[in-house]
Length: 275
Image (tube, rainbow, N blue to C red; front, side, top):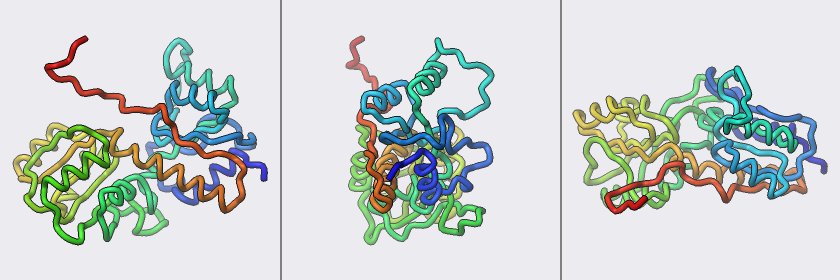
């Protein structure tokens, strides 16, 4: 069957209803024509010039990203700047770009839920239930438990493996044994007190504020900052899987691809660094 951009949007809306997005967010079709026929789909975390170049090279005229390509109202489009160049390139090459942001965060099986599964947690539920009509199994963050307590070293090794990081920052005190863990992919500093109240031994998120880290230290609550990119990157794989499953059901004759060019925007520097 002929697949159009609106078909991709419809499938995403089933898996991660756009109505779940926060009021300040910008999701859905942000660039392009909903009636355009799709050649292939490329999924990534961030809408970047690198991602658009990869889509062009792969012959994919539809991009799905977690972070929206247009977040705030545009006052100018300066094509000498990266954002303006991206918009110009996407429009010139007839590339549609879809944002699946906080709706994917709050979906039943969304960003944080998938991160929790990768960590091996069970009995999962939202850390903060959504007020949307979709029900109490939607919401921000996820909390779950291990069938048997994990030693601190084993848990930290699992975190580093799942996040594909050599190290993480921690505030507070790492428990000797860990049973309950709360996670929130991306920026989740404000949910730390809720994680403690819900009985989590550890809270894993990103962009933890200095004041929140001080609070964690003074309450002996363990907070791990796994970086925004690393805590959300696993969800891109989930996004691809969901679109591939939709394609199989509907007999889409298109490729659903995951970016191979995207990488963490930060690198670690230490005293051995040589410019």
